[in-house]
Image 1 (tube, rainbow, N blue to C red):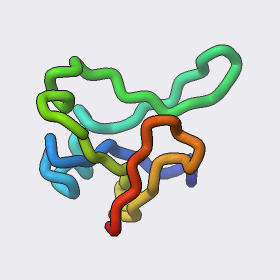
Image 2 (image 1 turned 135 degrees about the vertical axis):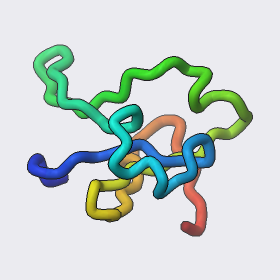
Image 3 (image 1 turned 90 degrees about the horizontal axis):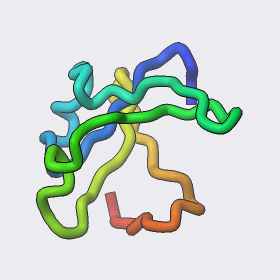
Image 4 (image 1 turned 180 degrees about the horizontal axis):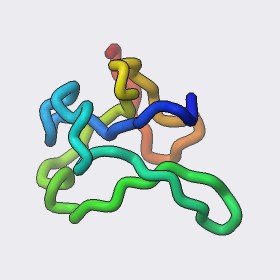
Length: 79
C-alpha cells in the first residue's frame, strides 16, 4: 500500500466506488500497540445493517485492494 495515497472502505452499504473521495469512508493512519494501521471509525449502523456485509478497500485512484488473506472473517468472491 502506498503511503502517499488515501484509502477507503467500499461496499454495498455505501455504493462501492461512490465511497472514493468521501472523508466519512477514508481510512486514517494510527498507531495501535506500536503497529502502524489504517483505521475507519464510524458507527456500526452505517455499514452493519445487513447480514454478510461485503466490502473491499479502494485507493483514491480506484485501485481495489482485497482484505489480507489471513483475515479471520474474510469471504472471497469472484470480484
